[in-house]
Length: 68
Image 1: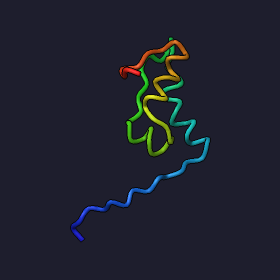
Image 2 (image 1 turned 30 degrees about the horizontal axis):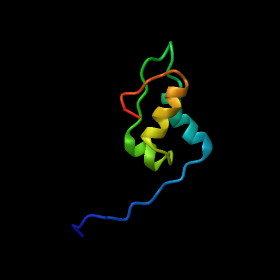
Image 3 (image 1 turned 180 degrees about the vertical axis):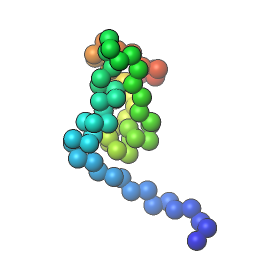
């Protein structure tokens, strides 16, 4: 029982929970200057990629610390 478990399962969250997680990023603007979500959260719980979120931020006139 000391071996590692390689059975990662994707957890599917309902839309309301996904939106609550995304508010940390989508709320960025004049009154909120920084947003952060761990890469694991973006991939596993939101089902998207950091690159896609950075591109979405760019369409809102924001920039990310990531090159897209």
